[in-house]
Length: 116
Image (cartoon, rainbow, N blue to C red; front, side):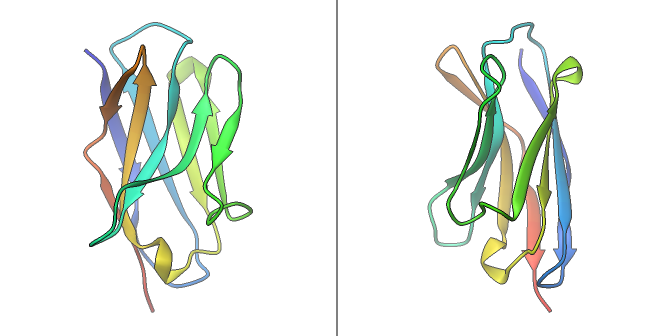
């Protein structure tokens, strides 16, 4: 059974930085994609960044390009999202996800609040 454990998040002032991490367990494969979505109050969940393990490619939402960086530790099935130059619009619950064989798995979500 695939499980995702998230860490990080919290409250930060505009312009600050935060780091989120997510570790996946319960499977053995390199055919998967991991990353982060976020959902702000009253808005739909949106993709923030993703990493495809097999190809090594990364993908970012236009709104975070140049500010967020997704990195991974393939040996530990862990992805980290480094978030810099945070803006109030980045405030949301951030969900780690893993897509494997057409099935999406989700973490419990972690709150990120950007406010002065």
